[in-house]
Amino acid sequence: MAIEVRIPTILRTYTDGQKAVEGTGTTIGDLFSDLETRHTGLQDRLVDGGELRRFVNVYLNDEDVRFLNGIATELSDGDSVTILPAVAGGAGAEPRPTGVVVGRRSGGMR
Image 1 (cartoon, one colour):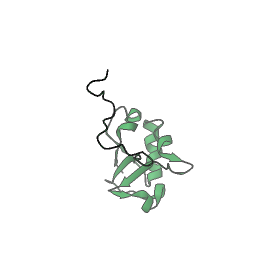
Image 2: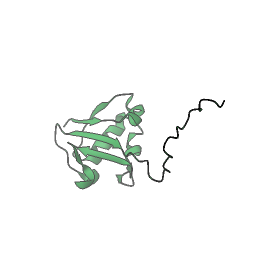
Image 3: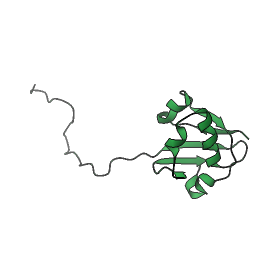
Image 4: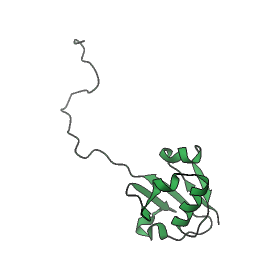
């Protein structure tokens, strides 16, 4: 059973730069174990304590597996799995005053 797995840029060091790899398995967990046999270190970046890591999102055919059965989500031949790191930021940042440019020198001062 062939499953296409799309790999985010940050994890491509484990797949020799490949954007997508193929794997097999009857569940997401089995698929990650299979990928680990060819792409050592990848599974540790995705799973911790038998669950998906907190800041990793995994989609099966565009559906978040956390809303299905997590790593126990069943797979079928031809499925597509996308791994996306969670993106965070912006919270707690102080707003800049209007008209202030950060990182540039003003005209007359050097």
